[in-house]
Amino acid sequence: MLADAETSGLLLPPLFEAVAAQRPETVFDEACRVASQDGAGALVHAKSESQLALAVTFEPDRPLRQARFIFFAGMAALGDALAAHCPPERGIRFRWPDSIVYDGALLGGGWLAASPVSVPEETPDWMVFGAQLIAARPGLVDTGQYPGSISLQEEEITETKGVLESFARHLMRYVDAWQNEGAGAITKPYLERLVAATDHEQTIDGHGDLLERDAPSAAPTRQSLLGGLDARIWFDPLREGPKW
Image 1: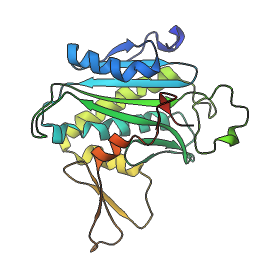
Image 2 (image 1 turned 45 degrees about the horizontal axis):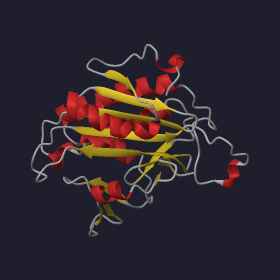
Image 3 (image 1 turned 90 degrees about the vertical axis):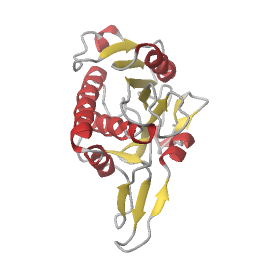
Image 4 (image 1 turned 30 degrees about the vertical axis):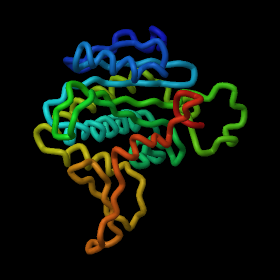
């Protein structure tokens, strides 16, 4: 669990309530339980020596096909929160759709869950966005042994409280913009952090899928949001968290 010094007195936006879980590995399941019982507004979190995890509960007011766009708001908010604590020249980026990378190395990944619905046009009772980050890699002597990953500790991103508070503020801002300006208000900042070939145009369609074109007149290639989330390529089931 996060130490008292790291979590006490969290300054969260109105309607948010901080909920400390026992272990990072249980945060997402705990958030789903809270969402099913208590509804929206919980920021569930936990930190261990090796992981930092967070999850937010929502009560959607639109069909699942549209409500799942909360994933882009959550990723964009987390990207902004982490970017505020790292050098700008070594930025936070995403790999489609849910991997979080720092200076090209895997830092963690995002999750999305919803209560069961019969069809995507049905509104779910609740949804959860969550993420797990590599806080540290204890026992690792040579960081070059795993060059494809990085930890918050190795990059001296240690302000856990600040990251959580910043994430909540950015998330509220993005949700408000989504409601007032449409889906582009959250997909645009997400796409700005998405790793892509420099000559490819990228857009997100009404299903949440990624469309890429290498020329304005070219037929787009499609990458499924749901397929990518189901694959969870960043997740190591043995570690119950991000891959090293």
